[in-house]
Image (spheres, rainbow, N blue to C red):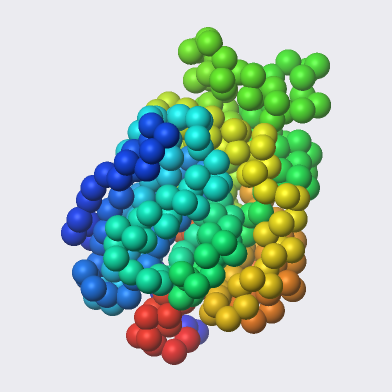
Length: 320
């Protein structure tokens, strides 16, 4: 039996900085690995999730030069939890600014969950700038995907966690939970904003893994993190990511010629497998890996194994 691959050793960035992208937003970015190695961009989830030290460890540091950044409004980017001038297309423009800053013509783009959405939007807008595309836990912000997770669907699998999610919302407003949360997350009452941010954030944190994993879910309770995560996610989802419904799968033909890999957990509650399957059907040239004993998180052993093998292969390190 082949041993599952795990994270590369802990590594510190060799460069950190900030980039003023206009509209009052400043992005935090970092680079890790080896300067001059294979260029790669890591796109975090959420939206609003921010980067973490573990994200650096998805790439062989001897072979890659990886750009990671906190998207508008989250992590160490400012203003914290800011919603103005914060859309999918602002982020796509930010990615191009970062590529120019790095001084590369092309790079491997790696995105999971919301990061897969942003990776697809970027690659379909600027296909000549993407050397390879690695996507995990596919999400395309379609209305059916949002309804599954925030109205009816995942609620039937995790009823006790769902009860905590809907608790801050009166019964008469539960027919449109995204709008009900929007009103409170953008309201004037600081205590209500924080209560709702934590409830929204924990619903996601507690349903990411196949089996309960407090190490994964605990961070979602942090008030500072939750406020940006919940406000930005809700803001994007209220606006359907500023995408036409089904746009990213409809336009998958724009990815032709880009080597790609899709990695999906069978029992992903946040981003059900149907979306990954439909992307695979629309983009059959990409490798498709359905991990049977996994949920959503990139830390699930089978998902992590496949991601590490994929980044190794695209760096020419091993043929797997």
